[in-house]
Each structure stands twice: as C-alpha cells, then as structure tokens.
Image (cartoon, rainbow over all chains, first blue to last red; front, side):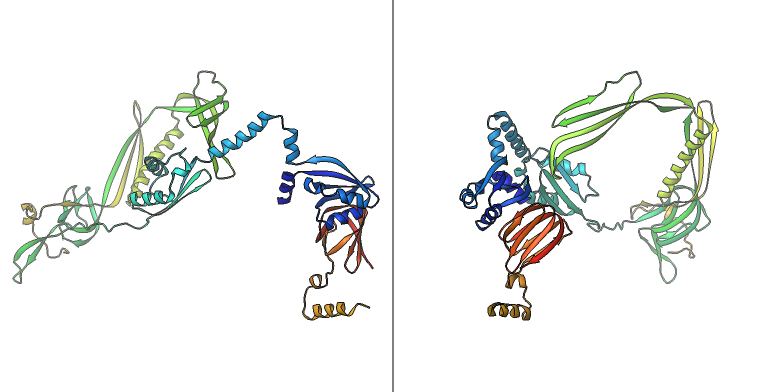
Length: 416
Length: 92
C-alpha cells in the first residue's frame, strides 16, 4: 500500500520490452537498483512498470542489452496533473473541499458525556454552555484541564472527570460519587409518634419513648402512639420528673384505603388510515430544509423522525443532521366502551393503585374492586385492607408539654 | 570437491547451528500454495517467459515451470513469482 502510494505520487510507466537479450536487461536493472514491478510475458515481449525517475536511468542499459523499450501507458499524479492542467475550476473545487474540511475540523460539532447517572446530559450540556463551551465552539478555545477542574469544583458529587477532544468531538467522562457525601445530621429534638391513619395495631417495637397503645388497640388518626416524655421515678416510686426524648418505634396497623375513579362512557380512539408519507430534513446550524410530500385530506398526521448526525471516519462529526421523517395519517373517533375495554381499564387503574402501594412498602391483605354504572359513565371503586407502618413524628417543645399528655396514667407493663 | 574454505564454512554452520542461507548464501524458497513463490538469495534471471522462470542462485540453478507466470516484483534480495506453478527443479 505504502509502495503503491509512493509510485502513484512519483508517477510510473508501463513499458514494453523487446529485443536481443531481455533477461540481461532485467539483471542489469537489478544490479543498478532500478525498481521494476508487475513484470509479465506478453505477445513475445515483456511488459513491466517502472517509475519515471528510474526510466531516465535505463538508457545506457538499453544499448548494452540491445533491447527496445516502448511506452504503453503513463500513470500517476504527475501525469494526472499534466492532463488536467487547464481545469482550473476542478482544481479549485478539490482544494476548496480540503480547505472547508480543514476549517470545519477546527470546531466542536459533537459533545458526548458518559458515566453520568445523577446529572442528565442536558444539565451538563447546559452547564458547559454557561462556561462558553457549545456546539460550533473553536477546538483551540477549549482547555480540557481547566474544564475538568471546573466540573469537579462546581459538582462536588462528581469525583472524577476526563475531558478530551477527539476529532470534532468533545468527550467527557465522569464518575459520580456513589456513597453518601456527608453523614446526615441526626435529629435528636423531642417528639411524639402519632397515628398517621386510623386502624388496628398488629405489631409494635418501641425503641425509645413511652408506648400509650398496645397490640390489638384501635387508634384514630392523630392519636399519640408513643409519648416522647419518659417518666423518671425515685426509689420510693414517686415521679421525680419527665425526660423529653425523641420517640422511636415501628408500629404496624391494619388500615383500610379506598379510591374512586370515573371512566367516561365514550372513549377517543385513533385509527390509522394506511396513508403514509416519507421525507427528509437536513439541518445545518440554524438552517433546515425539509423535503416531504404535501399532506392531503383533512385528517391529522402523526409524524416521527429519526435523527442522525453526519460523521466521517468515526469521530469527525459534521454540523449536519439528517432527519428521516415518516408520517402516518390517522382518524380520531369516539366510541362507547365495550365490556372488555371497561374491564381492562378498571383493571389498569386498580393495578396501578396496587403498584403504588407496593412501592411504599405496604403489605396488601385484601383488595376488591367494583364497577358502578352511572348516567355519565362508570365509577371504579376499589378498597384495600393494608398492613402498614402508621407512626409519624410529631415534634413538641420540651418545656410546653401538653397537660393531657403529662397527666396520662403510666402503665408499668408498657415498654420504655 | 568443494574448496576447503567452503567446507569449513559448512562445518561451522552445522556445528554452531547458524542459518545456512545467511552464512552460505543458500537460496531460500517459500511457496504459498501453488500460486506464488518467494525466492530469496538469488543472483540473476536466466530465462523468463510465461511458462518458465529460470534463476541463478549461488550454488545452483532453479527452474519453475507453470502457466501464466508473472514476476510481481524483484530486487537485489528477493523475487516474487505468481501464477500457476506446476513444478520446480534444481540444476547445476
């Protein structure tokens, strides 16, 4: 390959060799280090290729070996340039192509970010934009070291950054901190635990505070479950004082929850008519050119496009985007829900509610769903019997303890 | 009978396990299937046409027979012949 390029640049000839002693001529060429290649025997003579430079050196050998040389063809760049010496615009076109390519390669046309989970691409690209790094920016204007330092200092959660320019692409690789950056400050202010919902307590573990309820009790929403004031007694079992603490407990209760959602009688459906249109849009900087067949009929069209950025040799991205657009005509119509569709919709609603509850870590003991017919449509009514954690913190000031709470009887059997 | 110096060189190459193509300048022939052959350490071309290539090596002559024989390149050190090679023989 290297030799082929060298020969093309230097220019070479196809020569026909005939005469008294062609083998002698070939040996003489070899001894004088004249390079001959692609030698073949044809029409009772020989044909070979030789560079222009070497061809000028073979004259004495021709006489010595008593052979005759005939030029059959001229190849390579010098001959190409000579043949096209009058085609100035052609040459200008070739030169301007390389010139434009060179100029375009001085800018950044693609920014790729890898390794980011917490920060989206858009966030980081917007950040780069505020730092003056955007599409179309001069490559020489970007200092990768400074950029790395800036990202690290502005985003403490990013612990490692690598920025490099490859072709016309700015590649940024980041590594985010996967462990918690700082230990959260433990809140030790006194509080009670109150019921978030009404229900019957099934199990409880009290770690701190004085429990006011026990397993099997029915509690109302807002009722105090664990008091954040621990009584301290002396040896004579007399109340000395009450110590404010941060009540902490896991209290589970069976609760019920319901929902109600309406489904209209009519539903909108979309049906494709089968008519399609294809088109292409070229985007170059702020300009865009769209080629697509014009729409006909009164129905709306759903359009989807697939965008690709033009690139040469992998990383050499050009500021040219090609969008392939396909449009499909559709009709919108109203129809009454069938029984299957109604069941499917109500099922979807119910499943979604169940998933939401499961995501909260709630155990579903029972669930039921009913579809009620009304004049304006249907109502989906669902009910769940759940076992869930109901204790929620309710802070209070240690000095102003409600009298009712302080006056409540303490039960020695309750855990403290 | 080989000259004494030549015999000594052969003995030295044998005993010291040196490559003979380097020490003695023996011809080195590498076939790639039957379609091409690379000949190293040859001295010159004696006969060449599309059916025969006869080469002079230091200690012998070698002759390739075949069809559409074609010298892809040749220089002072090596030569590459391609085509359909049917036989090769050594001569004095």
